[in-house]
Structure formats: C-alpha cells, structure tokens
Length: 221
Image 1 (cartoon, rainbow, N blue to C red):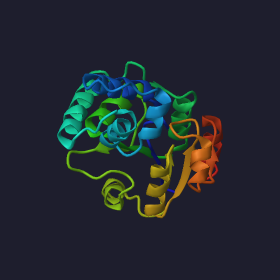
Image 2 (image 1 turned 90 degrees about the horizontal axis):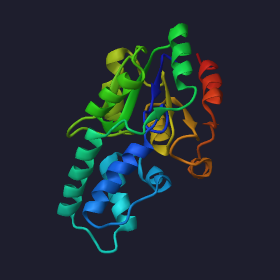
Image 3 (image 1 turned 135 degrees about the horizontal axis):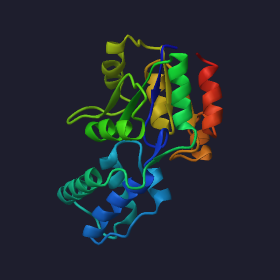
C-alpha cells in the first residue's frame, strides 16, 4: 500500500444534516414532503443529483418531469453551496487518525462524489493542519466514483498505481471503486449505510468505529 484514499461524506465528515436541509429546501419549493436524515442517507453515494432523484421518486405524489427535476437540483445545489457546513462535523476520532497518519508518514487524499469546489472548501475548513495529498470531487461534466478512468486520473499522477491504494469509505460505491482499481478497501458502518445493507451487498471487511478503522489501516502500512 502506498496511500489511503478517503471518501468524504459519511467517512471523514458527518455531512448528512446539511445535505438533508438543502434537499428538503428544494422539495419544499415543489410542495413535496421532506425526507428524514435516515432516508437521505439511503439516497446518497452517487452524487447529489442522483440523491435528489431518489428522493423525488419516493416522496412525490405525482411524477416530476426531467425539466423540473433539473430546476429542483439547481435549487438544492445553490442552497447547499450557501449552507455547506452549518451541521457538518468530523466523526469522533478522525482528527486523531489523520494526525497518526501524518506522524507515520502515510500519504492520504480525498476522492468524493461531492462537487469539487465544495470538497476543496470543506476539507481545509475542518482539517486545516493536515497535508492531504489531493482533494478531488465531481468536476463539471466529469465522472463519478467508482469509474475507473476517474480513479486512474486522480491517483496515477501521484505515483499510485492499481493495487497500491487503500480505499476507505462508507458505501458500496467505495467498495466497487476499490475493486475497479484492484485495491483493498475498508468500509465503515458508522456513516451513511447500515451494516446489514453493506453485508447484503457482500462486503465483509467492515469497521464499526473509527478506532477499529485505525487499527485496520495501520495493520496494512
């Protein structure tokens, strides 16, 4: 292993409150009932636009055409960009984990399906003293995890070839990303997916806490 590739939402940071607020703001504009945070957790993982589409499919009484869905997403995106860190906070133990990686000389970065500008703003805000090798989110017209081309374009410039990265995330998307890059993965259950959902997907290497995650990471470096 040469580096750790962290997911952002549900792995390093609990962002669900701010995501839910922005989604519910957009839904309210179209008189669609709000989602609970637990519902929003089940919708995220493949980008906010897909998360909103899943919310609409579950909550809307009548069908919403593509044009209105695009307008709703613009509303959600605009709201989230204005209110990205009101409820967001690091999971307990994450700052310590990053500090231990720093002391051990293990390089690490963030690869997220969150918009690139948001990821680049949020990570330095909460972890200003930690030297992330890279922070990359979804770029305009760009691909999302678990796409192989995105993984390669992000990691190879830093000398991280297939099989040389440890992917740490909270969803099946991160697990598939690791498999697509012939790499190991550690998937956490404290984030946006319940253990039973991850096990149902066939994921076995699960961590129920940051302390357990820390032990597993350092067993590989």
